[in-house]
Image (cartoon, rainbow, N blue to C red):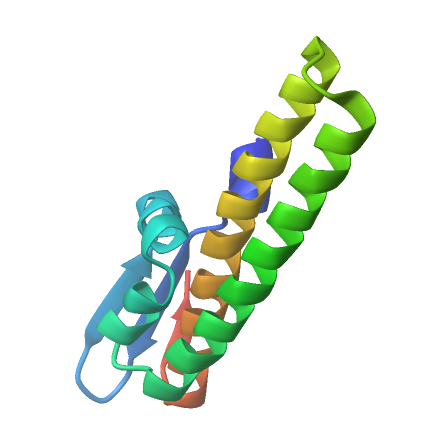
Length: 115
């Protein structure tokens, strides 16, 4: 399914303590709207700063995309659909970047990617 391909579920295992963490589709939704706060909640402080920079870049790209769509299409039906796609795409990309940064942080801390 396309949702599983875009938003994969990750399970991280800590071998010495038998702890595990699961990042699923709800984590993507939370990360999409909270951005660096999601990364910060996982105690990945430097990666939260990196996510803040990425969120600023994604927001800038989204605003630029909306500007181009409004300039080219105005308030036509195609323009409205492209504006919606641009906004939803920017929000989804923000969640994907945040979850990938958390994944990277867990792997760097010695967590093992489980199945």
